[in-house]
Length: 132
Image (cartoon, rainbow, N blue to C red; front, side, top):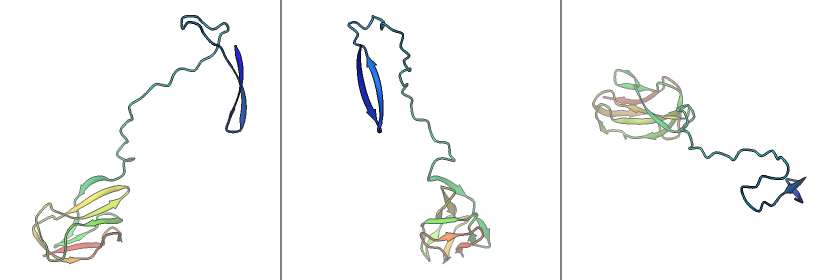
């Protein structure tokens, strides 16, 4: 058995290494060995841990006025003033709690007012878009 001095992160360790002539020969003294690490497939992160999970959100609508259903940050405004929109079309993408929420048009219409821009912070109940 040969003895070696190993320094790891500033700490010194003395280790003994025994050379085996054949893999079938057991070491002369019982040695504790740790089991070899097992390769595992990475597990899917839960939906709460994933960033940028997209969900479709039913916006609160008051006579064509679409308000934010929750507080968050506007990631994208997908329409412009005067655009014709159809029911189910994405109007705004709102990030809330590390999730991207698509705010969609509840009916066909024309964008009459656009009250948000990319990067804006909104509170629940703030007016995002007015359709006519």
